[in-house]
Image (cartoon, rainbow, N blue to C red; front, side, top):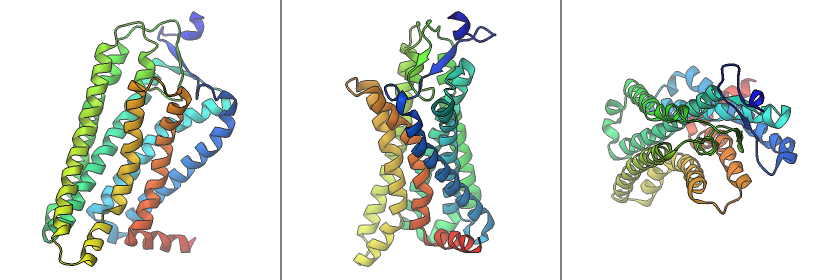
Length: 312
């Protein structure tokens, strides 16, 4: 058993079981899972390609959409390849270093994703509430700097999480009932005191999501106030239509992650396979739908994508 649970360097090797209780259905689950992932990659790389090629799309809003596409690719790619190797090849082993690396990149990209959504809310606020100064306030260079700040924030906030886990001793049972390394699941196989880890994880979740959602809510509060001051209903509708795509993406991004965090920590009555299925859907469904939403709701982007599709 010790040879099975330890790497040559003496570090533990964890066993990711996939979706507990549904092992017999792993092949069937992998079909929509891999399909969603392929569609996600195609959609997001299409957005990146079209925006990079079209000079008329080199604007702050489309730069933010590209950042969102990159984070979507990152979130799904951190999880799906390993999950599919479990579903298809029963390749369940993952070293401690591999586990912590996956966790670090997944959470860093997720926090960056939240920062991009927050910046998009600020972009919509400026576009509606101060349109005459939009071009001077939100330049491409400033958006790039905001993206860099968001990335640095994500790295600094997430880095302590794997470092705190690395110091823990682990029991003989290294089985993690999940498709990827999730902090709470890893903590459950530790024999040490995880109080600091749990506290930091909970504070990190509520600080990031709480802060970002508060700023997003403030932006939309100011947007609604500005829209209500417009003279006609047609002007109301036109202004709000510019926010529709962003609102849809936010709902898809924040709702499942909040539900997942709360049920994982407080929802002991929810079956494990339900929670893990939802956690897996979160990393494939929003990344698949986000480029579709922006492609449908943003006319300029839709027209450019259509132009390239017609050439094929």
